[in-house]
Amino acid sequence: MKEGPVIASVAALLGDPARANILTALMDGRALTVSELAQAAGVTLQTASGHLAKLDAANLLTAEKQGRHRYFRLSGPDVAQVLEALMGLAQRTGATRVRTGPKDAALRSARVCYDHLAGERGVLLLKGAQRQGLIAGEGDLALTDRGRTFFAEFGIDLAALEKGRRPVCRACLDWSERHSHLGGALGAALLSRMIDRGWVRRDTGRVLTFTCEGVEGFEAAFKPIQDNAQAA
Amino acid sequence: MKEGPVIASVAALLGDPARANILTALMDGRALTVSELAQAAGVTLQTASGHLAKLDAANLLTAEKQGRHRYFRLSGPDVAQVLEALMGLAQRTGATRVRTGPKDAALRSARVCYDHLAGERGVLLLKGAQRQGLIAGEGDLALTDRGRTFFAEFGIDLAALEKGRRPVCRACLDWSERHSHLGGALGAALLSRMIDRGWVRRDTGRVLTFTCEGVEGFEAAFKPIQDNAQAA
DNA sequence: CGGATGCTTCGGCTATCGTCGAAGTATGAA
DNA sequence: TTCATACTTCGACGATAGCCGAAGCATCCG
Image (cartoon, rainbow over all chains, first blue to last red; front, side):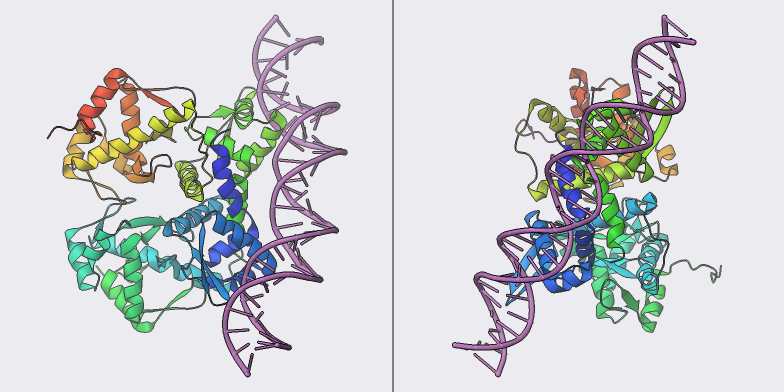
């Protein structure tokens, strides 16, 4: 009767369909305007405005005014993390829709989870990195020495990452696959490098599309175990 | 307009104060009867029964019938993890109560987080272990070689832990302190060893009480940095 | 300045859901 | 069998809160 309500208030905030839609729409880490969010949530502008005010008051979102627009974004990676965790729970709940539309397939294949790669590709990346001994640990990850040189050669400034407060490697449970993918500062840096290299393109929403050379480069670099074509 | 509702349904479940109380009451990992949970939530038996049916249907709880009692427990550590994560968010929300009762103090000092040690002591344990080089990493933890021998001597069967699917080390964000404590299989094993040794006693609820020898043993083993009394 | 766009506030409608009293079912004890 | 305990189901009440239309600010453009 004391600490229950504190979690209840946040959870209630996430528990409204319109607000949940708003939050998931923001899970790609981008900032969106009120009208865009209203459309994403399927409600009118006024309604969305009210919801956003509540989410902002709870510090789940941060607002930024630019001209006559107001841009909202998630106030941090931890918010996105909780949302992904809830998706995981929702799945076990059986509340998961069996309906798998075409957009669902793309989402499952590769998407952005706040700022890093998730979905089938994300899981493959982590598995490949583990298999090659770049990253050690199962649920709690750590860079190996081989991994340090590998990612440095990949064009990532590890020293800079380690200076920040954000964990470098973080296992993030993937809601569509049932395995972890790589989050944390390294996960974010990897995704932005892959975009720079033209391996992958961000479409609207959270969907990520790999280019042809992207797929080749990805598989050459991370050597994920493929379903069948695996020569000894 | 597609995946939002799936998280909304779970979150709405956690968003009711009575249900949130029920869940937090179960966060110590024990199983409680309907009447006990009704009392914990501050509602009548009928109301609690209804809530429990919903939580059970969503697979957040598992029920077990014994005689004319029905015992409920959280259906897994992941549920507890999400709850702790929500507490973390709630705190940043500013929804945290400033009121700190006497029971609160005990909870902050040492409590059980599903099945491992949390609170001030839990944070000290992890910090001490990191300072001694038993555990490496900041947000993503891994056992070092020194750590392996240390915990083996402490009486923990690491081989058994690593066989399970559960991550061995897991950084679990502590909602009362603002640091991580040690969760995962190792965290759970450590707590049960400490109880076996008589270092710590489980009171009612989530509160843990350290015995005199427990404090001594704890500090000798984990050598946490104390506030002032730190001889070079 | 006037009109258009983006957003917020207000007011009232409606529906959902938590709540409890009362009655019904199951288990255990005398 | 009879009573008591533990729990579930039903039905009705009441409050919270989401929703939208309309009106009010603010900003940009011509």
